[in-house]
Each structure stands twice: as structure tokens, then as C-alpha cells.
Image (tube, rainbow, N blue to C red; front, top):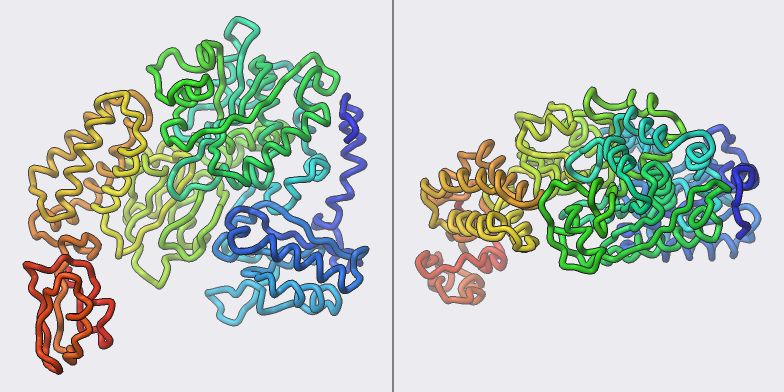
Length: 627
């Protein structure tokens, strides 16, 4: 690779490589003779054999003698995970969904050779049965999205450095080094209104400004890629689909604060993200965009990838710092904050992946452009991992201020199997559960906190009528309890006591006194825990107590789980439809079912262990669960 040693070298590289993107530009007419087939190569689609699909497409293109007229290659996540693997054909702008390796032949021979769309692979609009959509932007899943952090995911090959340069990659860095002082850069990010996308939402530009004003030549820039929330995959997808945007954002941030060394702290359980990130770092070093005197300036910056061992608490910034230093991942008291005294006692800025992915776009297009998107106090867009009981599971990027209803029903396609929406949990295990009555609230940092939840890193898990909110609270407490580092008593002991009380309630041993203790202890932990993990751990309990108190009362007073989830509160009863076949009796592990052949059978409730084996084997559905 030729070194990009000056601003002119970067400009020349852009001119040389920009034609690589020609077929993917909207201005190109669909009648072009050459085709490009982009295959989603994210972790989700790879688990559905998308790489085998890619190889089959390459083989079919070669067999058809189309090597000079078509090419297939990998790209990042398109976001529509529910419909993967995905293949997008340029310049026709055709979007194929749920493609299998066996479909490669039809795509090549029908679409490329005979110019006939493979209709069975097109997306069918659920609102209009039989209506197949060929364009990505016509799908309801994409209509209300606005991509900034994800702008290149699904567009470029993340493993090709030249493709990132071809979409104006590293132009923002050149602009900063050539035309702006470090203070100018911090001011631009401040004026854009960009807030940290990793949890607390602290203004990124203010953090940079504080670190930049600290004395001394030794400072550090860190990217927090330790994404550990259940159901969250935002940062992973960005690193898999557009790693250079994060690297460019880090270099710009390092220039703003005066840092010469940076680290990306990433969990080792993300093998594909690690592989593509490391490849991008190596490419940037080889090109001269990392190292000494970047682009001929006086600014130098080195970048290293550090692996985390999967401890959720290491997502907390001070615990992350201790881990990089080689110590145990435990948080420390603040102040001092890392921007003043961080890694090895030196000023340190920590931003997460999504925050940094926004930086190059802001610096290229200007802070006013970014601040015009979103709400008054929450600017820009936010990436959410939409999961749970939702029709369209996937990754969505939407303007701040959009409502929950728009995300869940317009983008997410509503609740699976036409079930009733019950709640949505935002912000990962530290977030709260928001009920149906609040579906029309605007999504921004302050509104979610006011509702007892939080933005967090962007997890959004949808629940329906079949979810028990007491059990949900217990599930998240189980996670945070296990992930606690144990350093402070409120988190180590307090969350354990909360989990024990929730377990007693779900097993029918709860009392009304438990509900009062839950609320009081949760409030104490929020006020006294050492770090963000402990302080926010009670959120699922407090929010479910607030919005679903009647479910707690049903568990405690009536010894009943309204959703039929809590096993110890269920009763299995054999109804009149029983034909006396005896399958339930033979399948019962504790022999608590009796009855003569061809006569009605009964269950001894005192001996029943609620395993559900009788319900599973009954051929006439005579066994029912009473809630």
C-alpha cells in the first residue's frame, strides 16, 4: 500500500479510488453493464451461512463467464437482521432477503444474465400481502431511519481500506489537522450537541475540552468497545461494518485533547469485530494515518487493541482503566474523573464506539448540520438494537425525539403473533421497563430518565402479554448480581437481597412487606453504590414496581402469575377433553397423575413439580395451565 504522507496524497487517493463507489451511487442509471452484489457479512448473517452464499455467488458468476461484468463481495450489517442473509444488487438497487446459499444460482442466472428479478427473494410488505418491494428505501423498516453512525454499514467492504477512502474517509481528519486547532475541534463537537452514546449521555465536546486543558504532554484516548448488555449489538455491528470510521474518530479526538497513545478496549467474545478492527488498524498504520507526523502534520498518534475478558463491569470507565493497566476490573470513586486523572494517572478521554463513529461525519458536514437533527437537548441520531417480541428484529438508527410507538410499530412492524404490547425495556440491564401508556413519549436522554429508564448504549427489548414483569425484574437482577465486581457493599449485598426477595415472590413465598422492602432497598442502592452498574441495577425493579404493581400484588396476595410464567405459581389441570390414554401418567417424572385406562385422569397438586411434561405429551390438549 502506498503511504498517504500528505494532504495531497489523501486527495489523490480519493480521486483514484472514488470510482469504486460509482455503481453504488443513486445517480448511476440501472442499465449499467456491470453489477455488484453486496452480501451481509455481519455476525448474524454469517450464522445463517452468508459466507457460504458469497462463495456460491462467486462460483456462479465465474461459471456464467461474468467475471468482468459482475462481482460479489462482503459488506457490513444492513440492520434488517430478521430478514437476513441479505444481498443487495447494484446499480439496480434491488434488495433480496432471507437468501440461502442455494439461491445463488437463481440470482446470477435470472437477475444478472436474464435481467429477471427473483421475486420470491424480495421483501413482502406485511400490510399488503402479495406486494413485493425491491427497493430498500421503500420498506417500512427503513423509512423513518436516518443513518449517520451506520452510514457506511451495508455500503462498503469493511475489509478494504480503499473503499473507506472512496466514501471520503479520513477527509475529516485532514480538515482537522490542516485547518483547525485542537480547541477548534473540541468546540465543533461541543456545538454539535453530541452526547456520549455509551450510557450517561455526557457531552462529548465538554469531556474533550476538560482533558485538553489538563497540563502535561502525556494523555490517552480510549474507545470503549466492551459492549455487554443482553440483547445489544450496536457497537459490534459498527466495528464489523465500518471500523475505519471509529479509528478516524479516535484520531480526531486524540488531536483535540493532545493524546499520542490510544486503545480500543474490546471484548474478546467478538471475534469478527476484533478481526476487522485489527485489520483496519494495521491498514491505517501501513498507510501512514497512524504513527508519526500524520499527513505531514506535527501530530503523532499510536493505536493498540486491548482485549477484555467479558466482565460487564469493565464497561464502566474507571473499571475499564484498571483492566487496561493490568489490574482487576473494579471501579474507583469519582472525582477525579478520567478526563483529569485516568489511565496511569494521566488525563484520559473514554468514548464508546457509536460516539466516535459520529465524529468524522460531524467534522465533514459541520456541527450545525448535526445539531439540526434530533430534539432540543438530545441532538443527532441514536442506534438501537431492537429485539424481543417484535416482528422486525434488527439494528435501527433514528433521529432523537422519535416516539417509542414509531420504533415499535412503524419500524419494528409491531408485536409478534398479534400479541398485546406490554412493555419495552431500554438501556440494557440497567434500564427500566416502560409501559404501553407511554408509547408516545419522545425518545431522548432526559425523557427516558424521567420515566425511570435510560438511553444506555441502545438496547431495546420489547415484551408482550406473555411476559411476567416480576420475572423480568428478577432476570435482570440475576445478571447484574452476577456481574458485580463486589467492591462496594450496596451492590454486592444489596442486589443479592433484592434478587432473593424477587425469587421468593416468583415462587409464591412473597409478602406485602417484601414489596415495601424492595422499593426502599432499591432506592438506597441507587444513592450509595460506587459506580454506574450498582447505581442503575435497581432500575428494572423500581420501574416494574411503579408501572406493574398489580402483577406484584397478584404474585404476593393471590399466589398467581397473571402471565403464566412463574412455574411455582402454576397449576396443571386435566380437563374434560381427557381420553384416558395414560401418556401423561407415563410421562410424569414424579408419578403424581392417576386414572384408569380410557377414563379421566387427575393430578395430585401437592406432589406436582410443575415440570409441564404432561402438557407436552397430551395428544388432545386436555392438560391446561391455570394462572
